[in-house]
Length: 132
Image (cartoon, rainbow, N blue to C red):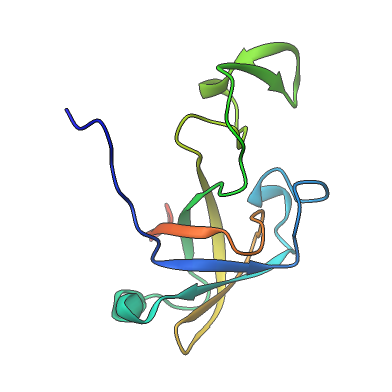
């Protein structure tokens, strides 16, 4: 088994959120919140079949996360929970996922609704949403 996995971003998020405070907890709670994925030039061909109105799942890195604990406070539970049963950004591999709706695609930029990511967040992968 590999001890380390090296992952390189395919793009970066642009959003109005610059700190964890005030950032929506989940994309489904922020359907009116806009964001943009700026795809790196070498990956632009990979978005050619995406269209406005489609839902996509964005896999990203919680790049400002500073470590983790395996037992953490949960937003909807009065009791501490195991980190894998929460959506905490403070996790062993600092990965997040959000399903968003594409509004527009142009020049390697995907504009979307449902932003719950900080500005500058590295995008690891994009997959079609459940409806695709």
